[in-house]
Image 1 (cartoon, helix red, strand yellow):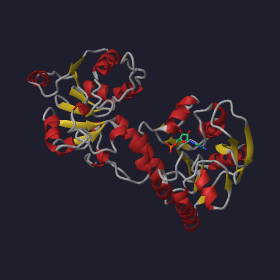
Image 2 (cartoon, helix red, strand yellow):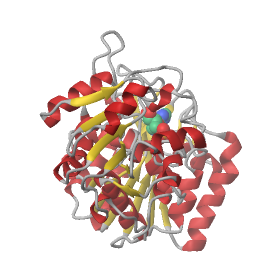
Image 3 (tube, helix red, strand yellow):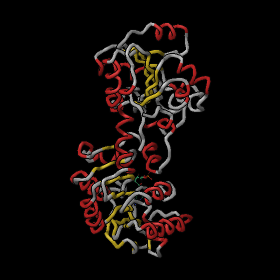
Image 4 (cartoon, helix red, strand yellow):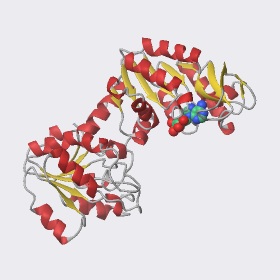
Length: 392
Ligand code: AMP
């Protein structure tokens, strides 16, 4: 069980606190305006706690990729509106003026530093750069779950120089993911979908050590079906992963984990809204057709498994949910989870996008905010931005 200190376990009053947020918000290509402020809103709990506890708050984050040189200025404006208080934006992080501003901030005041990825040292986890960032503060709070799987200067490097704890967002992610996967109420059912077996090998292998039942969906189904000798037509398949798929099925037998593959599917000649579709058995996809969603029998089968589960963990859509014609399977899985009594945990990325598309976010126990980070967590990997925090 991960037991990391949080912002509540350390005295922050009158202290300068550097907070790594996830302000990597989408910006409109033409106007540069923020198109969704969800990530800013989610960061408020930790920031407000620090303000209320008389800390001097210094926020930092990346936005976009290194080299894109996107600015966090618009974020500071939105954050000021949300807090009802002026956030001081510091454009030149290492200028003399910035130093003066940071040295003179009062208790409860908030400063936002410009995009850490303006500096290539950030992603290199450069020690000197991390030391300079850390020199602004006396305590470090990491609240950027979406970046916790990366050992960058502002997520991991700074922890070498400051007592470091997590904020409320990371705490919520750890409690939900760690509790749901490593300490679940059983039966634990995992649903793994998505496009490729190759990108899910680690998560499948790791989950086989933990779950009672594994439901497979999405395009990767067809690598499993072909490995078993089925006909898959033009469905996506990784021919170099047939043995991997067979090994995973064998490991399931050894570990007495029930692995369920779809029994039927929706197939079409093209992946478009206007395509004509037919339903076939999963191992009888006609030539010229590809499987793009799970079929009605599979939906019923998987719903029954979700109904008897006490914990359900989901990573990866079971069909091409972006195209309405092939979204039904993914929607039905999401609905069954939202109606179930189980603890329901949605890995970030595409599954979170699907749940949002169907308006079911509020009905899940936890929807992770980090795609890559939640996948690595489910793979059983240690996330450097979390590992580096103080233990309780
Ligand atoms: P991943 O990033 O590996 O989780 O894959 C997610 C993507 O898999 C989504 O964009 C889905 O549209 C896609 N996907 C799911 N099922 C299928 C399928 N049967 N055929 C092709 N793509 C699929």
